[in-house]
Amino acid sequence: MASTLRQIAISLDVHRVIERQRRSFGESDNDILRRLLLPAPGLAPGPREAAARSISRGAGLPRSRGLWSVEIGGRRVPAANLKQAYCVLLRELAAAHPQFLEAFAGEKGRSRRYVARTPAALYGRSPHLIRHAEPLVEGWYFDSNLSAARAAKLARVAARLCGLYYGPDVRILDNFREI
Image (cartoon, rainbow, N blue to C red; front, side, top):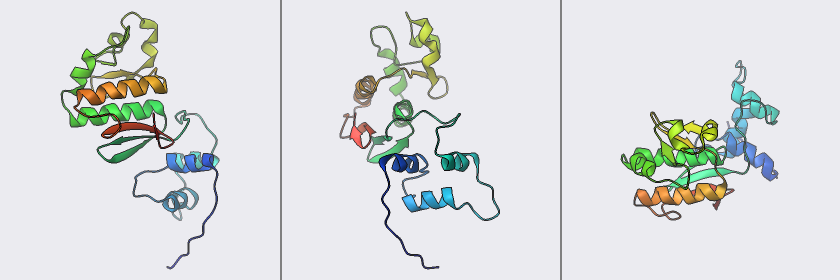
């Protein structure tokens, strides 16, 4: 079946919704819209598709501001928000560098560790912050209470520990700009 393409103008917020629904980098914007708007005949849309149709920020969807992604080794991995982008970066580095998490656990700020084996170990003198501990990989937690500036600083430390440079080798992007 031959189909013709037609160009349309969309606002940045609509483009962000499309990007949040991307399942792979090989999926075109048209493929995403087709999947969301034209479900397979006879099938009811899944919860993700139903949520995308409503476009509203409903319960259960991650809070998002901006268009986040991580670039590592020439690959771009999309993320819903800053916290997820930082988590993706740490997971990718941990997968590629087996000693990374142990080395990163040895680093710490004034009162917090960056990663730890238990939530309590992350926040030494600030146990009230334990609610910000998020699971990273099996047996590891990370501090998700981050500003973009702090995430960028910690990403630079993480890259250095893996023998990489922040910018050319690995980076976190917000709306396609390095943080």
